[in-house]
Length: 424
Ligand code: ATP
Ligand code: MG
Image (cartoon, rainbow, N blue to C red; front, side, top):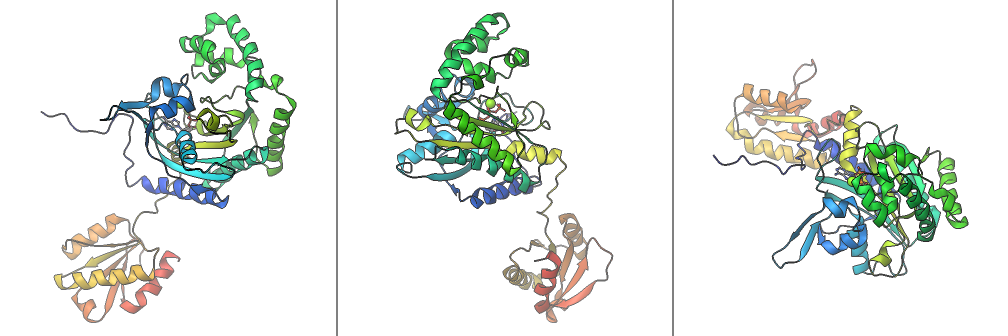
């Protein structure tokens, strides 16, 4: 027997009963981003593998073990994007959007990482994010974080924790790195295999380890704060005091280093305890070094990526139910002669009421069977059109969820009546 076809492991179908919640998150995020005058950019799902190697860095979980990489028919090595920043920077460089100008951009789309699937961690997942280019000061860092705070507010998600840290400049990190390596050397016997390797290649990444056995060691590591110069300190100060002024609570987490290599100075994450180990719903930071790393003139940049799957997961955990997809009205059409006029009447009502969700019974059926379908649809009322009603240019109105007499109403009055009902 042929093998049963199924979705690829770690890749999910989002079924119609869940999509309203997704749409709510996506629409809200879009509105919030646009309220700060960010503009959407769309880039391809596939990029040259080289782009991710050069931007994310060879010594990262993503590039070492998570990318979907393959050769296309020409023998070019391509990769399904694992995150949005690299493609966004590439597109901006290629299209001259970074030259002597400021850009505020947002994106959304599917990302792909070959990780072990679990709650909040999938092989295909969706991110929405922001990128801001050409601004070096702390004011834009603050703005970007305020966007995220406003987003949780707009989504009605309480209790997320903002963690922030600064990674200083590359020079400051060099001084810190030496101290960190000395500490790690001292505790060599407690390092896992990944960390032993990273201690050589990129010691800061040891702090990013997900291995719980390493947690204590990491907690005791020296802090980069001590290596910061005046400018980096002042930059960070503007952000923390700005957050305080705006009433956004934060926690300083000096172990926060982020998984990607291109960050500098500000890094932040929003964390929840509702999703088990997959606690980070949004992560971002400043990446002043990336554009130059990809061959352009240096351009200061900051951004974040939000995991939409995790945000939806949080809303589900909070019992958030957005049942906004059910039809308001189900149109019952009894008799073959009324089908055509029924569809025309439905069009008229949709013209008059753009917010109306009106489902027309297609495929005929008895009065009784159509009512069963009307009931199942979740609609609040049924509009009934039989030959009698049609001759009188009327329709029957039957409430499906409330005890109320069935009434008749002229076609011309229906739009106003339904308008009232849907609250438009
Ligand atoms: P994690 O520490 O959970 O592996 P990360 O540091 O790899 O996250 P980023 O590369 O910063 O994640 O991506 C930004 C956001 O995208 C994350 O904070 C998370 O919300 C989401 N995300 C990342 N990987 C996944 C995944 N496999 N499934 C679902 N969401 C994800
Ligand atoms: Mg990861």
